[in-house]
Length: 187
Figure 1 (cartoon, rainbow, N blue to C red):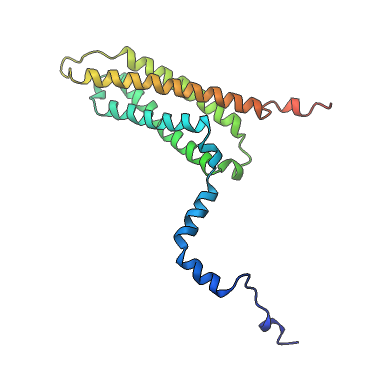
Figure 2 (figure 1 turned 120 degrees about the vertical axis):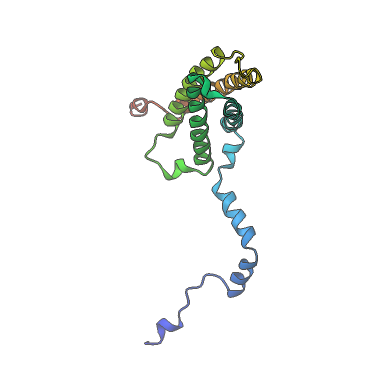
């Protein structure tokens, strides 16, 4: 009976399986990453809108950064809004893509995403209006008139994308049972 622990093995697979898995480690890594992704999210309208917000927001702040935006103080605000919301939207996109809502259950995700998109819509609307109102040819730099006008255009497009995301986030919040009081009413 003293020999019993040495005779027991805890392997769940054969040694040949482990050696064959080492050769396919790249295939195993890609399957693990694919399993971590929320593939249904990628195919949804909110994901497409968030990708548009990321790409167009990057384009907008790159246009502003390529011009002498320090000549007018309003462009500092536009640049702040564009860069900050671009970073936050990218982080939120990857958090949803990798399923952070399943790991962070204490966050009311539908409400948080709706509030984020609503606030982002308001900030982008004010930044777009400030950008569009201050587009005029600089006397020293007339070349940048078109750049700032293009930045205002992309600011308008990103504002519409954030507004659409806020609308779909609202629908998701209402469909998810956003009011806890309605769930507790006895039937």
